[in-house]
Length: 312
Image 1 (cartoon, rainbow, N blue to C red):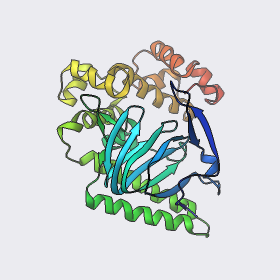
Image 2 (cartoon, rainbow, N blue to C red):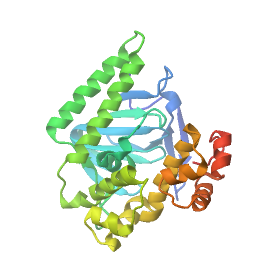
Image 3 (cartoon, rainbow, N blue to C red):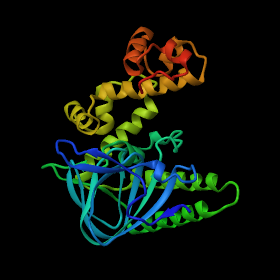
Image 4 (cartoon, rainbow, N blue to C red):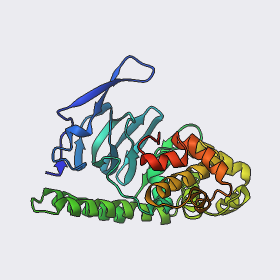
């Protein structure tokens, strides 16, 4: 079956809470992938609080009814029907002050989802790449939210996903993955086009900037051009990147370029100098230095090893 309605699983690991002696239970994907396919739909009807826990898989959370406080080490915020957020592997969180609270978790292994060009989508960047809990002034945060119509559409697709996973005939995993990819695409499109309030403006502005970098990494880009694209000053641009990614705009751009260079090294026989030029590096020597820092080896060594020794 592709649906799980339990609160707990048969197998947990425990890890020490950061800065405290308490142990935080860690749910493992191995306890969920009983059929070897790393994708499940798990529905929860919470009638009591759920304590702090973590897991080693991605968890896409869609709140379907009720309300509660969602607590993470970064803080807490109220959540209700329509809220959607991503819990990354290793992130501790809990649900408290529960009031008739129901949600659907789409849990999956990191390697399951083929992104293709989805990283160009501002909505994908906002929901799946940037910190899902968007920090607001004063240290509070909020999740992204779907309108009622889109929540119902997503709910219908989740029902289809459950039905596909429950099938026994050949090809049901292929169909389930296709439906899951459709759900991710639907969410990315929604958050790419939604009109947002001032509270989320920085998050979506940065999401659009990251999508812009994914589409334009191969050509020369300057800080003034990026600031103009975001309609902010260069100082504000730097603040946005530091706050949202932990990196400067230039380092973030170089990381995008190096990730695409890594794919070219593995999937083509282009000379190193052409790989550098194709990913926005005018100087192949500078590219090689940056790539060694990024992957732990030179571009040539990386290609010859099939990427098996790289640190990213």
